[in-house]
Image (cartoon, rainbow, N blue to C red; front, side, top):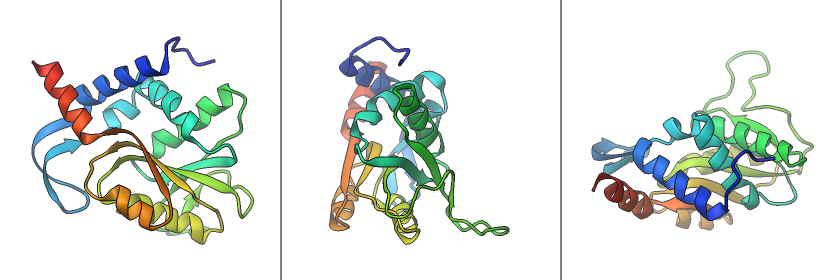
Length: 194
């Protein structure tokens, strides 16, 4: 049972406030995509907090496809997401394993790209992402998962920076579902600071 006894709307509002307070910064930044931006979103202070991860997992779980038997994402941003979601699913007696996709293959042993309890080939896996800008990191994870013989239909993200990720992901035949967009985060940060 989820320890947070509240509506999904309340959970969403609390998570948005946590992100605005702890993950969002205004200034001059270079993003992982190489783009310059006045807005920086680092979700790790929220996703690595117990309360933030519980809220997030509770909000993500309904968006994971019913036939998905695993969630996966590119390390490092997705590591807490996949673990939290696997645990939230288990609390609801749903089997949903966590997989971590490496940025480069392991340099020794099996030289694996994907770590975790691997499902049977052909299984549906939902990809998780903290922040999407261009969609490049998400699509890299999808590529490795697909090469390993699994099917991906959707990507779940905490924040869509609204800089083309949705279009790129859609071009790849996938659905992007984001809990928040950058405009919402910026507005909440302004509301909190005023």
